[in-house]
Length: 365
Length: 254
Ligand SMILES: Cc1ncc(C[n+]2csc(CCOP(=O)(O)OP(=O)(O)O)c2C)c(N)n1
Ligand code: SF4
Image (cartoon, rainbow over all chains, first blue to last red; front, side, top):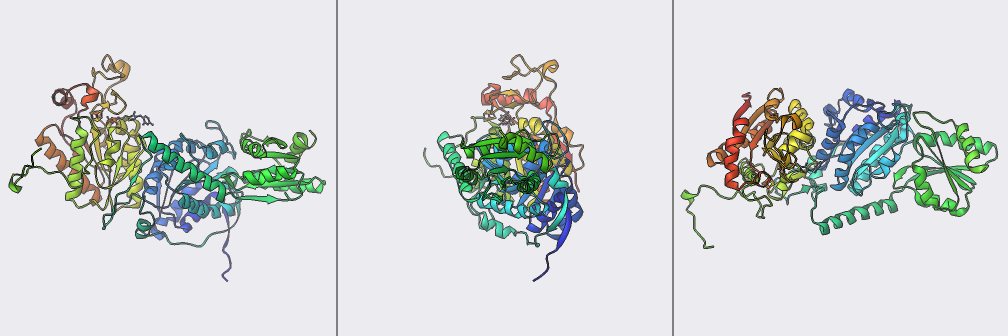
């Protein structure tokens, strides 16, 4: 067997490599710290000369998400990346993408807010990513990487899910994962899908021209003025979200089997908290970590089961003022204590600091 | 109605095959329908119906997709040129055009329009300027003439309160990525013919990769203007055309 190609790379650079290797058709973006390396790397790699992938710097995030909308409407695999303030500008487009049921990939390398905030890492966009992030009843598929390797892996996973469900998917990373250098095994290069393949694969919906044979035309729209018909569309979307909740939940559990206490943390926070588990175990505290990998659909069931089994308390550890904790509380549903511990403004917690918080807020309370 | 047989040699105008056979939602006398007709004819004559993707706006033209038998993508308000860019970049061999009102293109979509033009995207833009927001009930647009009464300028547009109307087509001429800008109308048969030739040229430019083309069509909105179709045509001639003068504004030959 061929030996894996191990590289040392920044998370943001890996997104660019992974996109090309996945066979992504186009990237549209606008620079913003801490994720500008994604487009910079793409421009340096010139994939239009190798795979034929289009890379275009747009005039704003409003434009880039609408370029994504247009290209995605033709059945192509397209993506954008940005950081928090840029994602706010994209929220109109995200709503239209979800409404028109278009698959695509959005990478949010989060920084602290609100407003212009800080360029340092944050997880302050959990609500925005998981609870809509635009008008109307919709969900994005949200994957939260906690390593540079997962920045690579989730590009393919997100695209696959986006196409399986015809829904926009987001990789919700943060400035730490984006800027951090780590070992990574890049995926092998895949071919881009041909126009003929896409015309057949997406013939029921993609607006890529009716073609030689003049197939019945496709209209990509999110508009329906008849209430009865619009409600049918809304119900179809909700059925899709239900299917996602039933089939696509992903999470990782560390030392949860015998745990008295469980930390719930995602992304860069989960890395820190895995060290907290070791510290606690060394002191004889039976602590476990549940790391949601899909933030939407949220791993409600495993949390419910831990609470049912008798876990004495949950601590939701997030780089924000307490967002995911609401979903943890909903899952635990009053069975036991659920608290939040967080830092903001780009500040990070240490594993020891989290352990102290666990003692203060849960164990000794 | 009795069937009348039309001899081929007497036929002046027939329904374009690509115009779908459903009832248009436009108000009687509105310019939108005529312009749809012209686009359908041009696409048909150029044999592009299998390779054409239209982008409809938010505005009365939103349902353009109900009327012309091609693939369509409905854009968010003002974003049509960005959507068209996305499509054209991944399908450079296809015919991509937008259909946009003056509110859509020159108010909320100014940024997307100017930058698509500046990049020289190989798309055609059909820009319907009726000096008002038709769909939302006749409010002021950036193109509303001074003194013109609308739902949000009930005493007439006053430049001290509402600023001045502007001509985005003239502005676009200064951009290197733009190869063709023209201002047309469809209120008389001769104008309809010229407008069709302009649309055809814009489509040919897009297919030949010559850059960004825009056909502004100075139009009536009889409902918004609160005039009968005939009176609206007259009002347009007397008030709109002196300010929005018809003719080519830019035509790069190469
Ligand atoms: C973001 C957003 N803002 C406002 C609207 C409401 N709206 C719908 S159409 C329109 C104006 C359309 O006017 P114009 O582009 O001139 O087209 P017309 O209807 O006159 O053909 C507005 C403001 C909207 N749909 N979306
Ligand atoms: S409101 Fe105006 S622009 Fe809209 S369909 Fe009626 S006449 Fe045409």
